[in-house]
Length: 106
Image (cartoon, rainbow, N blue to C red; front, side, top):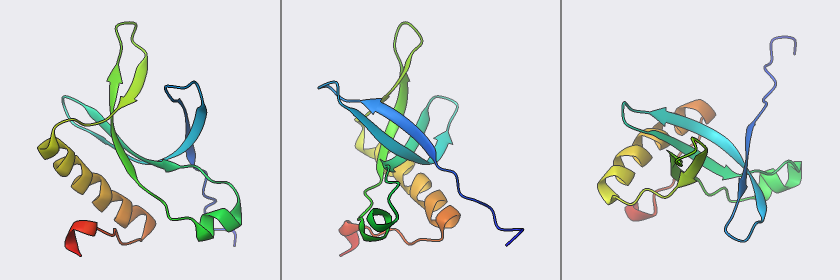
């Protein structure tokens, strides 16, 4: 038990268009020379919810407004999304020892 690492999630608080605050867990981050991308999922801290939940992974791009404040935005380019999604999902599979379900393969 001494050598077991305690998992501490990175939590992002995001405000939606309606002003509602939603907490997300940062699963993985990927940086290129031109951009930063993140894979997040809705945060749950209840053990039962975690076991029963179907975690949807959301891939977003980190953008910056004119004041230097960071915000998350959807990736508009399909090819860019596919490339980034593949990289992030491979990192998540390795890090969390899970297998990614791709509905396109069914």
